[in-house]
Length: 249
Image (cartoon, rainbow, N blue to C red; front, side, top):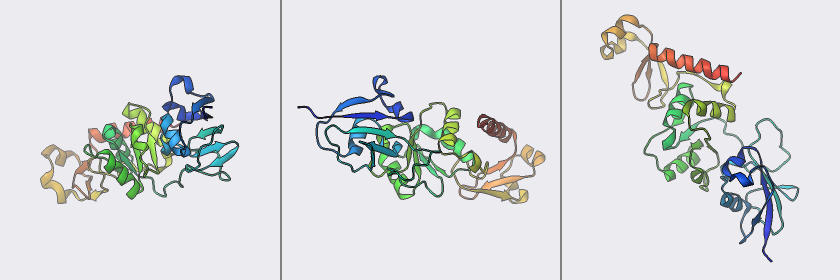
């Protein structure tokens, strides 16, 4: 007789499922002995998105060996509900929230840096490099590639749902509850280095005549040396930040 389990995924984990399997219990053939982590990822849901698994009424971790007839419920990370008595699949949140982003999220990386979040991004990072950086430097991996989140060493990761950068930044701020952690314009949007105030006289030879004439306050990246001032581009970014915070309510 064919072995099978009954499983249901909750909330945003349904984003990874075909329409006919969303928000319902469904049967799934158990073709071989495997851990529940392998089973969940074989269905298409990255383990990095899962925080709670209930099997036959009890919470289990990723190593649980799936058995014929198991009834399984799979939940994402809970932001506001206390589930401390239960067995979490994800490690504790990182003490400092910092990110590494895949090649498809360059504009999001710039927005995160604009808001002051430590964000690594290069358009030549391959998947093994991204996974290693995330694991070794304790960074949350943001990606549009669900297969990348299934790499074993990933402990903190998130699949970015939106494909529009301005919606992506709202998605990340909401998902990780970061609205109150913003420190705008404290990081270089070019290289992620920290910025600090600099005397105009010390950089005057690098400025255009009109910039020298109309601006007196300047900031410089400690790493790459890029210079910033509150010109028209700054005003556009400030307006965007205001709109982000209005959207937060």
